[in-house]
Image (cartoon, rainbow, N blue to C red; front, top):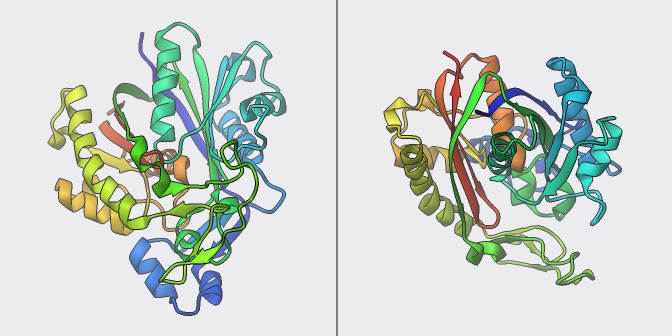
Length: 333
């Protein structure tokens, strides 16, 4: 038995935050500097009352409508998020009810960031090959904007909110081949929100500003940009090499590389290190930003619309955890 991607859709919140609006809060930056360095001109952010489940439901409804999916045929829901509606219950359970899916479905959340979509595909493929499910609704839904301090110019320029919905089934337009997965928890504190969960349940109210006048607080997302960059440069080339080995392919045989859309500076650096021709390397972040676990499926959807998905395509996600994952998808010629 094989597992395939049968459909991908995505949803972006209505509220758009442009670079022009951002630089009003940070006059020391220019619109051109933000766009030139990170490759992002705008990002979508949720309204105060919007949560991950709201985005997830809207993305799934788009998938159901676009691909004419029978809700009764869905037999498992996998939902990747690091911004769940509640500690409990599981957000996937809320989504099952709101989508009116059968009560016979399995449903679970898993907490991963930028590697989440690729990890989710590995879980979905395992369910199919194990004979546990035949039509898995894989959702990524993130609202990182809720985790950012208002004066955090670095992260506010990068991150956007979004949700995607992917149907993994026994048939489809892209066969899911083999995976390379990795983890290194030693880097956990380089991308973290320390307070709010069981380790530090109360807000710490410990806000300080670093030498660059960036806010640092246990109560908001903290990212050590230089350490994350170093991790990426160390892990991604090895990830690409191992993914090629696992799929018995040469780099020249990959028609398109679709990486996690962290920022353009980082992707350009990786592409040059890996010696990937620009025409075989996909970018899509300018109008949506870094949407964490949703970047790869959004990019795949856009590349599909441009008819750029043919034969072997490599996908790769990497980030918070540290966590990384790669796979090859085989699209129909």
